[in-house]
Amino acid sequence: MAAENEAKTATNKRKRGYLPHNKSVRKKGPCPLKPGIQGFFITCDGGREHQATHEAIDVIDNFFEELIHGKDSRVNTKTTASSIPEKALNKKIKFSYSDSSDNDEDDENDAENGKENQSEKVAEDVDNGSTVEEKSVPAKTDEQLNEVESDKAAGDDEENSEQVVGKSKENEEPLEKKQCCDTQKLESKNPSPEMSVDKLIEAELKELGDKSKRRFSKIDTGCNGVVIIQMRRRDGDPNPGDIVQHMMESASATKKHMSRFLLRVLPVEISCYASEEDIKRAIKPLVEQYFPVDAEAPIKFAVQYDARANTGIERMKIIDAVAKSIPGTHKVDLKNPEKTIIVQVVKTVCLIGVVEKYKELAKYNLRQLTSSETQ
Image 1 (cartoon, rainbow, N blue to C red):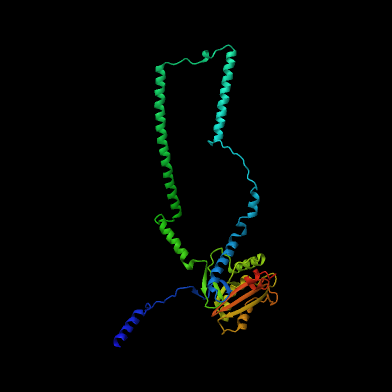
Image 2: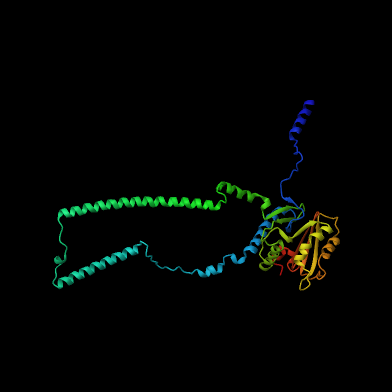
């Protein structure tokens, strides 16, 4: 028995793990939900959160690219199809520098025409009384002919040698030029000449693999049927409200199915702790953007509140805190609001965003907007 107990204690000691001293251990996986983020609040079918996150990132990224580059940048298939003729045009194009068979035939025709002209001239000379022998060049002797042939042979050998040397030089020159061009390209790509191409590729791969530098990433909520996508905005990027508005309007106009698991997609422009004081403090820049004091006409608004995994906060206190932050020139209209303030409480974090045409666009539900039953 003592031996068995010793063996068990030895195995337990081997399996036991120790934490590092005075260092926090971070678990692998998506970042937890915390205040200060911007992005998208998405609902989906229960148990489909993993599929919905991948689908949401793809859909949001597509509409983000549309807002930046626009739809006009795409190629118009109608114009290109109309510009192409239905039947092929069999036209023969001749170039002045081409060595085609057509040019050879033209040369042969020119030679035949020249011979005919020469024969006509000789016939005219004979008719005029002049003989061909009078106009012919005096014959050369055999020695002179041999000298001329030897000179021609020597000249041909020199020309052939010069052509061979020239071809070798021409073959060598492009290699040197290509090497120079390649080095220039590498120098232009490399900001520092010391870094090699392999190091640059490794740096780019690290940037792509670094989750902290991605524009869209997943946030761990811990709630069933809820997905939150964080957006890291850069200079010139549209805010989440513009992206969601463009998504819903295009879905309502085209009725094209773009998702399988997504239900409601709402923007998150401000996030803070779910308390009255924090909400009043965090909502100020959002009120200045959408509800200015010096507006030409009063804006009708409503507050849409939902809470998940939090039962300790009173609903009316949060709604009153949001409504009292809006200037008095604007009015509350629950039936036909121009703008709706979305307030989503998830655990201890409050997510706030502003949308337009909330009821007209089926409460921003993609499945209802793209279904054939909706008018």
